[in-house]
Amino acid sequence: MKFGTKAIHAGLEPDPTTGAIMTPIYQTSTYVQASPGDHKGYEYSRTQNPTRHALEKNFAALENAKHGLAFASGLAATDALMKTLKPGDEVISTNDLYGGTYRLFTKVFEGYGLKFHFVDMTDLSNVSSLINEKTKVVWAETPTNPMMSIIDIRGLADLLKGKDILLAVDNTFSSPYLQNPIDHGADVVMHSVTKYLAGHSDVVMGALMLNDDQLQERLAFLQNASGAVPGPQDSFLVLRGIKTLHLRMQRHSENGREVAQYLRGHEKVDKVYWPGFEDHPNFEIAKKQMRDFGGMISFTMKDDSVDYAVKILERFKLFSLAESLGGVESLSGHPASMTHASIPREERLKSGLKDSLIRLSVGVEDIEDLIADLKQAIG
Ligand SMILES: *Cc1c(COP(=O)(O)O)cnc(C)c1O
Image (cartoon, rainbow, N blue to C red; front, top):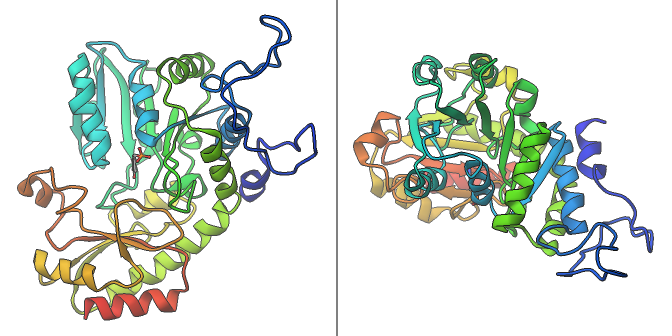
């Protein structure tokens, strides 16, 4: 089955009692048993829920994986994967990574004896030089946030071949439509479903997709034992959102291309970060592992002042200033004062994250209106 067909059909069966084409919202905490242990595979909704199960099958199909697991948030999914590790184990992670993941690693799991190394993974030798017998997970995010650097997933997988190390990829920025890390050798894919998968800025949810049966068993155990599961109503909303994932991603990518080119041609704009430019440092890798380049774009101004960036952000009428990304509506953000404020300024500047850097999540509105909004806001 091709992607769009999977998005609409995978995991879904007509409801056995009524034939309802859409999976019902099984809004129940428990299930009646005829006599102790005599049940239909459902005992308690933390452990099993039919709406969630349909969604988990759909998740697996979207990433060409055998198994899918749904969690209450993206961070809860990452949390579950980290809980498969033991004190003393080491993780090598990208340095340009989602702030909440950095906080979970350093402020929670370091306290339980895990060791994290944060490196620039656009240079794979930074990873190979850190690998030792304690390394258990390599954690990559590509494109990175907010600099849109591209990490070579196949290159990382080749590096880890034959070693007992999991390659986990946070695929949130790409969505499964643009990139399927398992096809390039990754072991585990993580999504903040909150973003492109749900797609309508109305749900917080996370997912893990993987092939390994033993790891699936351990993660399903943790999902139930720790209990960070999404409810049936949210599972339904995501099933519904995913039905248009391919259509939304096509429009996000089309609009993203137009916005990136418009910004690049603007006299007041300094740099535009978008992996679809042929002179992007890792364009060849992006082209190899991504189907298109999506709607996430960052740019800096020639007048590199916080004041100017703030003025632009305040003037936006369509690009609402808000955390998050991946919804149908366009959003803007200022990493230096919002998502990345906790990183010291010198560190930010080293990765090119200047004071005037604005991050856009280009939505699926009409492109003429988006360009007009950029024009009036930049001035
Ligand atoms: C939002 C986000 C997360 C965290 O997901 P939540 O659903 O907010 O818990 C992780 N990684 C990336 C890249 C994100 O954008």
